Image 1 (cartoon, rainbow, N blue to C red):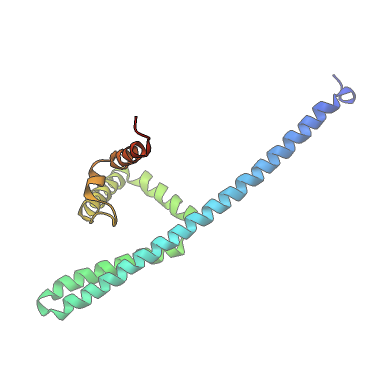
Image 2 (tube, rainbow, N blue to C red):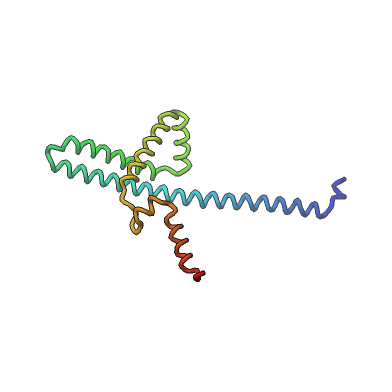
Length: 164
């Protein structure tokens, strides 16, 4: 089939396909930018929380210094608080793609160390969650039996049924 004898419907289909591809690329770019902005916002919130931890560490060190016998411990706590503040500043200074690239590099350079760090962080998080008091407004039994809310709903539905 020569170029002069092409079907107009075929040409129109090609035009629509190219237009759709362009619009999908544009939509993908908009979604990517919006997602990156959301992640950047969460990164800044994390930096704020890390900063609060650093301030709490500094306050704890000051309280330890008030007790002469705990002066060496105050130095360790103060040093740790300084490291936490540096981590907060590091997060604020870098954009998410940079952090992702650095994380990939660290994982490639020392995969076992990263795996051990993730394991330790998971253990610490598990310990913290285990030690945390139950959420407000929920009974302990609700946490132990995940079917409890469903059972309560089923019982309430049975109560609404007319007698047989």
